[in-house]
Length: 415
Image 1 (tube, rainbow, N blue to C red):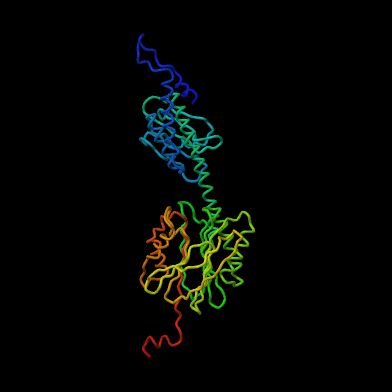
Image 2 (cartoon, rainbow, N blue to C red):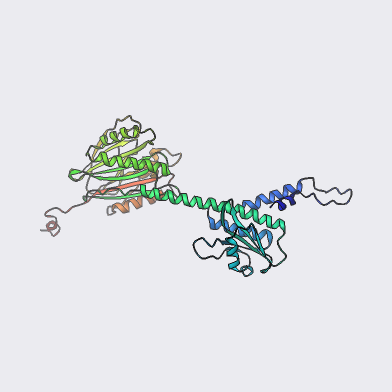
């Protein structure tokens, strides 16, 4: 590598006396360094190991006129083979020789038996991932080419190390997120419930939005949606704490506004707990009622038997974790053919748009009377383009389930 870099410092060849187009001192060095930066920048453009290997062999083949391939270390899982081949694969040397070199500590090895063949370690520091194999028909590799290939291989190895570390951390985070993503409880059989959760971003499995259902006495069910401030794993951890506290408090069968008050007391006593909004709805099928209470959350919506959507106003108290309390209930009649919809702000909000307009977009949705809760959620998510939401989305739909009463069969038969 040193010899190759030294070639940048060679002075330009002297020309005829009086020549006026002689490059200024350092011009050649500057242009070569610029070319080097451009070459190196083409390796490691992603956090994908296979892509990095392909970029390495493509650059190596393009700059030395060789066929280039990667051979992993024999100790790794899977069969050893040439990978990410760039160029004429028929020129590649014996695979057993390349595999043997991949396990050795040589800094670089050439083998004239296969023509001008060269193995350069795919290594950075103490980490070795295999070798870069280069072979060509014309002439042996020059010292400067060897040094360049060593530099490129080291660059690729560094990115492979980062890619593997990123994958390892992603698996750890994914396992933890799956552990945090507990299924909501089961509602009473007299209530149909459907839930959807869409985390924002490509890799996240769960964030700070959540839904919960808790069975209460006398056939009632507590429906809950919440939204912890922030995204990702940190928000998911606090989300789990809120859900656990909610389940504990709900076992006392308190009204929704008192459940919020106790949740707020618990959250505000923990200085590191993130604030959260929350909407609780207690559905009482026997009385045909729903009682709601809000901690800084958007209102619920109801879809009537004709398919029209409207919002249910509810007094809005402070978010959980502020310690301010002040939550009030609101009770509404709930018909058997009406669907209750609870959601987090990611479903409706758009950056730069007034929240009233965002809610009006939801209220303008229309449905058919025959749609079940699952179909309703699919329609809502599709019409509001929730797949491209700017924030996490959690939404819950519920409807009273018709339970046949004595005499229903006779009435249906006209008796």
